[in-house]
Length: 462
Ligand SMILES: *Cc1c(COP(=O)(O)O)cnc(C)c1O
Image 1 (cartoon, rainbow, N blue to C red):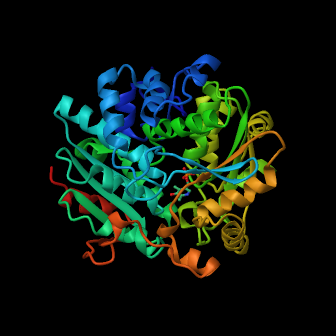
Image 2: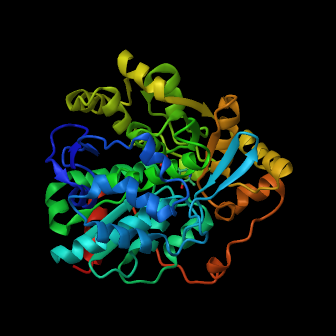
């Protein structure tokens, strides 16, 4: 399997290279040249398998040229052994026909661990094999950063720099990034919003001298390997509710469109998915584009679900690429227009997107009232992102089609919002009990490319 860029102008790469590169050199995102298919019998055979076995079967065709079967199996085993639940991604029933897929049993309590733990393992194999070093730079709205640090801390061939928007992540998120004391971990608090952090990251990748000089590697949600790791739980959850014999729908609390795009790939591989529902908070660029066809960047309004406080939703480019029938030049042109603040999705492509996705937007008040309602109706305490998903899912449920809402983080990661909603601060799991006692280490950096570059050059262990 080879990987091509959504903008059609970057070198075609094997899986391991696409994984270590992150962003393609033409500014695009890597996608597989073809999508491997799983037939009904293969999907049905996932029933009753361990999460690890399902992960192996779903991912193997995508990575076969870069990793042996044994390397992949070992990486998967190590990636998920630290999870706090034997099922890895258990389903909990909320109401008849409505299920929560709990994706927060990993070490940093958000779904990002599913992908990050795995690519940490795969990076190690690939770097050791080639005797190579890389400098990982990531931008985070909160959860990616902690997941990346947890996955790469202490690794011999890697420096990891994480940019997060100063003052705009929750205290738990910040402490998860600033308390690891490994010498190869660098938490950077940048002035501005997540979109600023993401823009600086893109600038670093587009600076080819710098990129080659430090061996820049990206692990943001644009990294294809992350999308791939997330495809797995769409299969395992759908199969436990009767797929492939009946279709299911998913509602996905969405920011950068990585998680829901993984669902898109599962569907394209043959999983019978009725609807993929995009759930956004008040930062609703995706809901607006689905309704109006215009992708128009607004201002980021901080919310109680900060991991979705995004206006430029990077992985949406992948959905556009497929909606535009793989026309890289057309994708490039839209992305060029976006520099002016907006573009309009061509009618045919919009039609294609609407065949796959529904969407909904949830206000701050609705997020909090949903946390309270779910608690009253089921006893479950959910995080604010998950609450956004549940509210939108309830608006889109259909009789006879099970709805699976992705529970993207543990409520203890967002105690202030949960307390506001139900008056209870959910406790951290025991393995994180010391988080508030450990010293923090963080560097403030201006929203400026040159400042950032010199900081990285100075700090990395080379
Ligand atoms: C990252 C994140 C999201 C958004 O996921 P995307 O893949 O960026 O759409 C939603 N909820 C939580 C808790 C997250 O950490």
